[in-house]
Image (cartoon, rainbow, N blue to C red; front, side, top):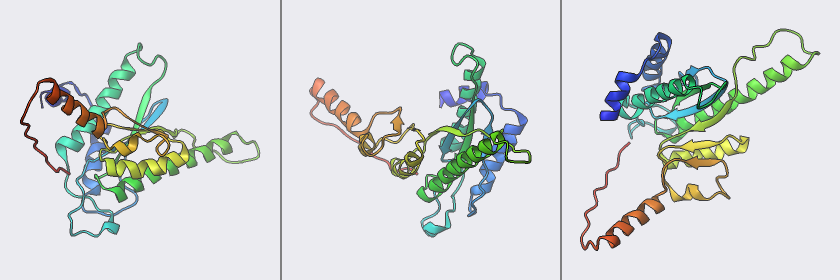
Amino acid sequence: MEFTFRVYRWINLSLIASITICSLISTSSGVSRSDREVLRMDGDLIIGTLFSVHAPPPTEVEATARQCGRVREQYGIHRVEVMLHTLEKINKDPAILPEVTLGCEIRDSCWYSSVALEQSLQFISDNLESERSSKKATNPECSGSQDVSRKQITAVIGPGSSEVAIQVQNLLQLFNIPQVAYSATSRDLSDKTLYEYFLRVCPSDTLQAQAMVDIVLRYNWTYVSVVHTIGK
């Protein structure tokens, strides 16, 4: 929580970004729609992001409805703010990526596979449309002006759930789009023969379990209590 409070003090979002966050929060909850709101920040390289801004739908809602639940302030909104703050810090530091700026396209996965896949399809659709527009703009036989300002997604960060990340990876790798997970820990995702374009910044469940066993053996502990929670 201390880190979160520091982020709140540091972060300096523009008015446009603040309005977009509000749209991202208000649109998806309890509504099934394909044109979900998106928060986009321009840059030389665009990073697609899947954050669970909303919780999954209530259990009584049909899976095909693709609805989202309540807003997840600490888990969802905070991650959006940290993402924007981090990109701002990177772009202002010429020692990190000189002459290159990072942008983002943040979409709500709702910690729900059907919504995450829908949003991933939108990443792919935008990439294909951007590629077609670029070809038309460079083809002298094509007439009319083309908007080629919308850049393709370079990679996708998220989603948080291992189950959802596996389904998203199965889709993204068909289009050679790298995926970087920040909290998906399933050991299945370590299989590079199946998930060639998947990377993560957290250890797998297998490595975490092995570390705990090593600690127990190192200190000769004879009794260990484990607290398990199921959070969505």
